[in-house]
Length: 268
Ligand code: ATP
Ligand code: MG
Image 1 (cartoon, protein in one colour):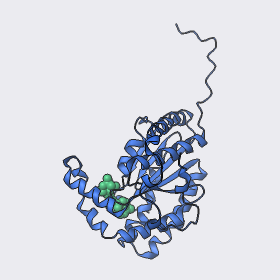
Image 2: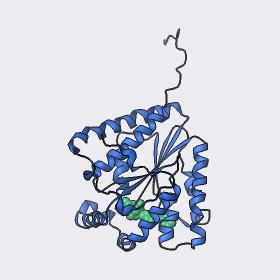
Image 3: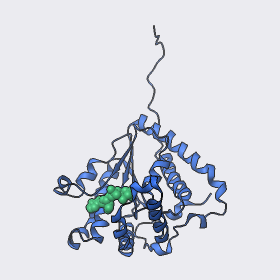
């Protein structure tokens, strides 16, 4: 088994995405051995999620960020296949509405954090406010720069109230993005995902890279770590994400509540 801890960013660690592998197959000697591994990890997630729900005390927040085409949707689909929709809540954060823009940037995020007993999944997140917002200068630097500290403080509030946090950056190469965009154009079933705006954002690849690096350097903390997941291969990406989630749930060790005393009960 490869050691997936190597993908975790330590607090304060410098991040250079050009030096970090996006290609999972370079990291394992025998990919076919790992085929079953993913299914086992996913089964663990389903079993532990069920206990988390029954216990009703702890909560897990999972954040996904990536370049466009990085595979957030696909990862969420495959890692949570078989999960009970009663305890997994996925929220996708798009361009803020006028109502959202008239509040602080964390308002819509805070409303979506998972309650006790649930797993909350963020498809994009408050980190957009130091990514797209920074790269496209949607607010002045004096506004976005203090956000790293604000985000750390916000996440500390969540941790202090019993939320475990995991954050995944799905790392694809620029060439892989090109191939995925081409597929979206060529394959009729994928065309609905094609967004001409993505081609515009691709021109800012290096600016986005720098913004992702800063985000992880400044906001990977002991209690709320970032993982850089090599994501050019879907199978490796899914295996890493499922393994980290399953291991985290094991550490949280949710238990079914003590059953009521049923001795002497007779059902007529
Ligand atoms: P897919 O990756 O599957 O295409 P998506 O997450 O890109 O899905 P879209 O509706 O295509 O969903 O795009 C959402 C857009 O909203 C992205 O371009 C993202 O950068 C933008 N967005 C998200 N949060 C913010 C924010 N706080 N401010 C400005 N733009 C944002
Ligand atoms: Mg999109």
